[in-house]
Length: 574
Image (cartoon, rainbow, N blue to C red; front, side):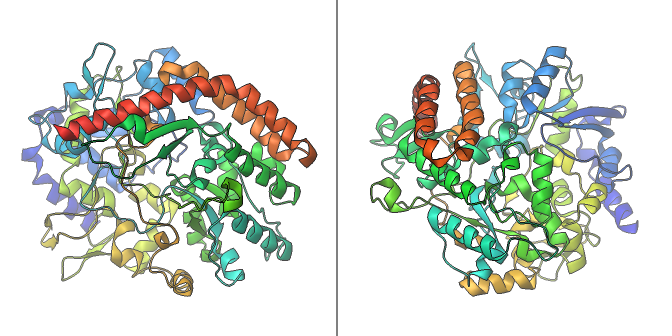
């Protein structure tokens, strides 16, 4: 309690800096998050600090059910939450007119911290509306780091495999699709159940709602490319210099799901389905059921993005089932699948702003100035320390060299879901603007100084990542001769001028795109489960049905990728 009072006293000294708009009467903001989540406790200490400082409380609603359907229902009502996070379907609420233009409130003069945060990537973030006006509906919740890129682990897409599977096979180097599924099959044959007699699942595929990327996206990665959503972009030259570049020649864009190189992946899944690695139930599994299965430690492998099953990873770590946590592998096709070509994997991309992801302020909100002013203040060093690290002396400590660190108990708390509901403000902070990467300047925290060179996120801090790593993981990395889990994949490549193509707004071809996805969602599971003798004919029928939508969507994306590249390159040239 003394630590909390000390923090409140420290924050009270900053009240003179708070814009007058924050000194108004207390309010409760309604909040919608486009992801599942749990309500914070009534006595959550960070939300108490926010209420004390800003006079703001939050009423959270988290996603249950289908995201697009939920958003469509809210749009039809015409009444929106104050803070509106549309998740991976934010384009729906933007095109539906539910969000205000933040540029009416964010500028170098009015909000210098927020402006400095977005300014380096403003060519990607600030768009044009139908009338040619500059618009910014959402300040990204992630992807605007300070300083050089940090890559200690894989937070995005990969083929994941339990550490125990690799240890069982004496720590092999797994680089290709065939090697991966061969290992899973051999392990499952030798170990059909866990120590409690619960059957293992060899390979799980999440297909629910927008998370069907677990079913659709692997092909582009097997071809060696980072995440561009539903298109494969052949980059003919990794040199992204402005002079002499012609994006039309650089970036050949096509849908991949209807191509022969995609057939190889789904035919492989058909093969391993017949071998018992994939359970039929995976295609109807809800996200909650998927997370529960991973949390139980019985799913040996899957394609996913690490952030998507982070709660399951935390649950396994909290139960000290470290051997059941996962390694991210950057698999590619074996040369036999691509005319003998050797494919180099590029799963990790350069730092990328999470465009149109995070909170927007809705047109129903009566106090947008107050929210923006609050965000502006929360971008300060003091508040970013609180959101990221917590209360000094209680949740972390600062050593004599000005380095941020945690005791084993403090670190264990950060892995405990129930503890976080009372001691972190994840429901608000995860979707809000935030500082990431390196702390570039010294920060005063009470009577101590946090020296430049620390990290904003504890998960990137050397003292946390390596100093508090469990013994199992230390020994596991040592067996491979690696120092970090990102060593299992190649280093990040330079971000292409168009960013990542999944961020492009598909609204102009929404009907074709929706049909394109619908055919995949309906037919790919059937292809995986069909009799092998039927596969070729079913594949041909699938390609024939999806072709018209693929042609329209692919042509749009070719032009859109080029336009996005030109926009960014032209801005750099200026």
